[in-house]
Image (tube, rainbow, N blue to C red; front, side, top):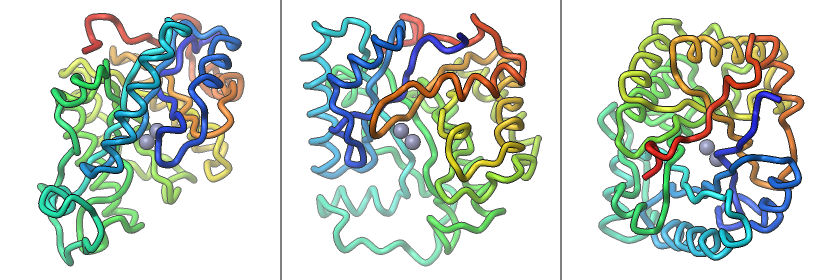
Amino acid sequence: MIIHSDWHIHSENSYDASNPITVIGDQANTQGLRCFGITDHANLNDDKFRKNIEDSAENVKHLQAKYPNMVLGVELTPIERPLYDYICKYGTREGYAVPATMVDCDFAIAYTKEELMALGMRYAVAAAHWSLIGPNARGGDLKQSIESWHYQQMKLACDERTTILGHPWWNGKGIWYEDFSVIPRTMNLELAAALKENGKYVECNSHFFTRAKTTEKFRHQYAEFLRELFEMGISITYGSDSHHNYDDLRPKVEEYLSAAGFADGDFSELSEKDLW
Ligand SMILES: [Zn+2]
Ligand SMILES: [Zn+2]
């Protein structure tokens, strides 16, 4: 096997997930994982998300006696600065309207590293989830979305809160899931240089290889993209990014990884020096 640990799993404490932590723990150990991380979403700086990550931290810490190879992490996302400021002011996103125009600098992450560490979190998967720029923020325009993803990923590669760059180039709308070569190579080289310079890990996320939206061609291209990063000296971690029915997707994912040249020993675990 190529994959021996899973650093990106959501529990029922995530707003969008249903895996009970005990089911994850039992399943991870049945799969024979050396270690696995719970990374519930901390999207917004409002009470709802704060409560989610507090509950996640409490439950994981409680169950670590039963599952000593379970690590507490978190998943972070860039949000537009006006939304962050709005929530700071009103305590809720209720009533917030996306501004008609936004620029690249409109970018925030909901929690500081100190706040996350105070909850006992040991690392963060940080990832772009939607387009932040332009009049069509959160929209699906191809060129603008690519630019926004690149901008966010470059910032995340340099952010002190990022341990693992999560699912690079993931987008729920699937607008580049037919042919990954729409992403300019210069962007990937720039991203690789930033990741390497800052000692960040990069994630191989199962969704790229298992979602119906992604084509065979894309899956192979994406595995080759990861292989190129690996050959440039960047450490790769695996993330199932499971939200429901935690199960073993590694055989499917490894088909594409093997074809791209990955072998046992190439994937990384987070080393103690990189954990908070
Ligand atoms: Zn994500
Ligand atoms: Zn996730």
